[in-house]
Image 1 (cartoon, helix red, strand yellow):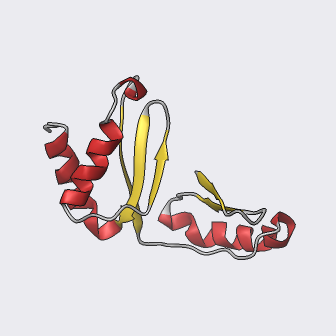
Image 2 (tube, helix red, strand yellow):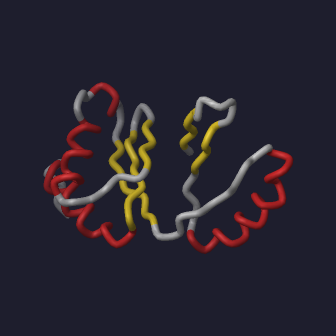
Image 3 (tube, one colour):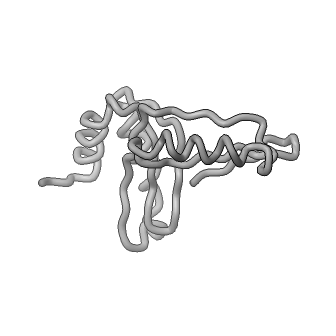
Length: 112
């Protein structure tokens, strides 16, 4: 989940769910919209989640930058980024998943 401040006393909150659950979750969010004080609820159904993870990833400087650069070199736009101590994940256009996998495998010398 990613939350960003808007500077107007509210924040944008984004999260990734399984596409098959989009309709049901959208209905729940619409019902909760008023209670949450949300201005609007929207979805982007054609995104995919790609990332890298590993133990103590935070102790390896430059990993996220290498990932972002590899995706960029392959013409892949990053929509959102989520990081933790052991992972970096991005949402991208789902049509670019194969190219993203290729880019990350090349950058990090991952073989099958």
